[in-house]
Amino acid sequence: MTDHTVRQRHGIQVMEESPNSIQDAQIVDEKKTIGQINKDQKKKMVSNSALAILTIMSLITRFWMIQHPQQVVFDEVHFGKFASYYIRRTYYFDVHPPLAKLMFAALGWLMGYDGHFEFDNIGDDYIVNNVPYIGFRLLPATLGALLVPLTYMIIIESGYPVITAILAAGLVLFGR
Image (cartoon, rainbow, N blue to C red; front, side, top):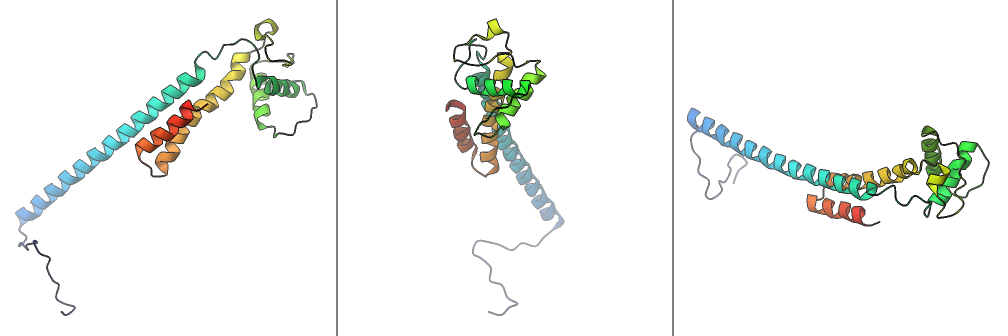
């Protein structure tokens, strides 16, 4: 075989191209393109629907009954105390980085909280002491709610299928 001759594959017939055959080929190509677009649109629609459902579920699970209990719970003792220190401009020492406590302090300041509540014990009443505790709880609830769609989008952008992204986001959604 020389460089100028090309062997034809079995089953492929060479036809002379006429104007009609070129137009027919273009129509077939357009139909394939339209079919591919519809398939891509369907995948995108399924992905967007899954993202929307996961986001709604995330918002529901994070904000449901956020106002209960009306007492200090668990880490609110620490974060609330440090936020109060920042708002009152009181010096304190902590071994942990300050970003989360600064975020709580900024939120408290924006809500008009003056830092008067000490957050001494779990179970201390917010209502009696006039503390805007729901506003304080909105910060971790919002960040936690945003984590679910963020996980989904990271998995999708990494090239994994939608079902894998749903599983990963679902684990974040229900794994407190």
